[in-house]
Length: 105
Image (cartoon, rainbow, N blue to C red; front, side, top):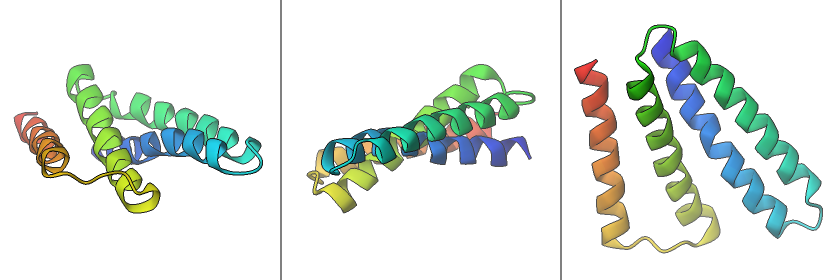
Protein backbone atom coordinates (compact mmCIF):
# COMPACT_ATOMS: atom_id res chain seq x y z
CA UNK A 1 0.00 0.00 0.00
CA UNK A 2 2.90 2.37 0.67
CA UNK A 3 3.87 2.32 -3.02
CA UNK A 4 0.31 3.35 -3.91
CA UNK A 5 0.64 6.23 -1.43
CA UNK A 6 3.92 7.22 -3.03
CA UNK A 7 2.52 7.20 -6.57
CA UNK A 8 -0.51 9.22 -5.47
CA UNK A 9 1.79 11.64 -3.63
CA UNK A 10 3.67 12.14 -6.90
CA UNK A 11 0.43 12.78 -8.78
CA UNK A 12 -0.65 15.38 -6.22
CA UNK A 13 2.84 16.88 -6.50
CA UNK A 14 1.79 17.89 -10.03
CA UNK A 15 -1.18 19.80 -8.60
CA UNK A 16 0.69 22.57 -6.86
CA UNK A 17 2.67 23.96 -9.83
CA UNK A 18 -0.48 23.54 -11.91
CA UNK A 19 -2.44 25.52 -9.33
CA UNK A 20 0.19 28.26 -9.33
CA UNK A 21 0.10 28.42 -13.14
CA UNK A 22 -3.69 28.56 -13.15
CA UNK A 23 -3.61 31.40 -10.61
CA UNK A 24 -1.55 33.38 -13.15
CA UNK A 25 -3.82 32.67 -16.11
CA UNK A 26 -7.31 32.90 -14.59
CA UNK A 27 -9.18 36.10 -13.73
CA UNK A 28 -9.38 35.05 -10.08
CA UNK A 29 -6.17 33.87 -8.43
CA UNK A 30 -7.92 32.28 -5.46
CA UNK A 31 -8.93 28.97 -7.07
CA UNK A 32 -5.45 28.22 -8.34
CA UNK A 33 -3.79 29.16 -5.05
CA UNK A 34 -6.23 26.99 -3.08
CA UNK A 35 -5.57 24.13 -5.50
CA UNK A 36 -1.82 24.54 -4.97
CA UNK A 37 -2.10 24.56 -1.17
CA UNK A 38 -4.46 21.58 -1.03
CA UNK A 39 -2.29 19.62 -3.47
CA UNK A 40 0.83 20.35 -1.42
CA UNK A 41 -0.86 19.18 1.76
CA UNK A 42 -2.24 15.97 0.27
CA UNK A 43 1.06 15.22 -1.46
CA UNK A 44 2.99 15.75 1.76
CA UNK A 45 0.68 13.55 3.81
CA UNK A 46 0.84 10.75 1.24
CA UNK A 47 4.65 11.00 1.10
CA UNK A 48 4.73 10.78 4.90
CA UNK A 49 2.58 7.64 4.79
CA UNK A 50 4.74 6.08 2.06
CA UNK A 51 7.92 6.62 4.07
CA UNK A 52 6.74 4.23 6.74
CA UNK A 53 8.29 1.39 4.74
CA UNK A 54 10.06 3.06 1.80
CA UNK A 55 13.48 4.60 2.50
CA UNK A 56 13.49 8.41 2.51
CA UNK A 57 15.93 8.78 -0.39
CA UNK A 58 14.02 6.37 -2.61
CA UNK A 59 10.65 7.89 -1.72
CA UNK A 60 11.81 11.46 -2.25
CA UNK A 61 13.49 10.75 -5.59
CA UNK A 62 10.42 8.94 -6.92
CA UNK A 63 8.04 11.59 -5.54
CA UNK A 64 9.91 14.46 -7.17
CA UNK A 65 10.46 12.49 -10.38
CA UNK A 66 6.75 11.82 -10.81
CA UNK A 67 6.02 15.48 -10.05
CA UNK A 68 8.64 16.78 -12.45
CA UNK A 69 7.75 14.55 -15.40
CA UNK A 70 4.03 14.94 -14.77
CA UNK A 71 4.30 18.72 -14.65
CA UNK A 72 6.38 18.70 -17.84
CA UNK A 73 3.66 16.67 -19.59
CA UNK A 74 0.88 18.94 -18.28
CA UNK A 75 2.81 21.97 -19.54
CA UNK A 76 3.23 20.46 -22.99
CA UNK A 77 -0.37 19.27 -23.35
CA UNK A 78 -2.30 22.14 -21.75
CA UNK A 79 -0.04 25.19 -21.88
CA UNK A 80 1.77 24.80 -25.18
CA UNK A 81 5.23 24.33 -23.68
CA UNK A 82 7.77 23.12 -26.20
CA UNK A 83 8.24 19.37 -26.58
CA UNK A 84 11.75 19.19 -27.93
CA UNK A 85 13.46 15.86 -28.37
CA UNK A 86 15.91 16.80 -25.58
CA UNK A 87 13.11 17.51 -23.10
CA UNK A 88 11.38 14.24 -23.92
CA UNK A 89 14.63 12.27 -23.82
CA UNK A 90 15.55 13.81 -20.47
CA UNK A 91 12.10 13.07 -19.05
CA UNK A 92 12.47 9.48 -20.27
CA UNK A 93 15.72 9.20 -18.32
CA UNK A 94 13.91 10.39 -15.18
CA UNK A 95 11.23 7.72 -15.72
CA UNK A 96 13.93 5.08 -16.19
CA UNK A 97 15.49 6.27 -12.93
CA UNK A 98 12.16 6.01 -11.13
CA UNK A 99 11.68 2.45 -12.37
CA UNK A 100 15.24 1.58 -11.41
CA UNK A 101 14.73 2.90 -7.89
CA UNK A 102 11.57 0.87 -7.51
CA UNK A 103 13.30 -2.34 -8.55
CA UNK A 104 16.37 -1.57 -6.44
CA UNK A 105 14.19 -1.24 -3.32
